[in-house]
Image (tube, rainbow, N blue to C red; front, side, top):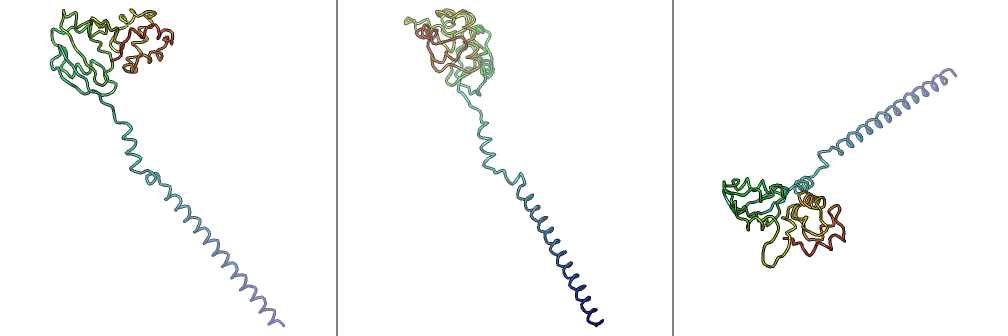
Length: 208
């Protein structure tokens, strides 16, 4: 009777140990699997593997600057055709041409004007009044064409009906900031210039 009782107790002990070992193994396997999954997740999300060379090339392409071709004539050291970047001003291309000569009438040129493609800059000599009037924006041809919107000064713009000093300055400021007007109708984008004003002055304006 005692022998049987001892056998039963031993069997229960062996069974308990086996269960504990099995549970411990399962817990260890689970922890190991969880750690492996975490490592795989971290490796798969490395930032330098998510970027592709194509994305970088597209970003580089977006920042490529625009270039304009400008013809510089008259009283500059080296007249000729020059290439300028978008946003550069007349004084930049004059510097490329070697600057003014000693006989240049500098006052006839708006050095702050933004360059645009196919722009022609003619620097007159002192005393060449006919050249000055043509450069500054008012055409002196027999046909009396009108005022060149992209070259006229604020003073010349005040010759237009309904355009006072403040509106003329606003037109020149808008042109300097945004580049030359593509057509006369673009004037409605200038603060203070509405459709009514545009209708009264459009026949006197030329866009080149």
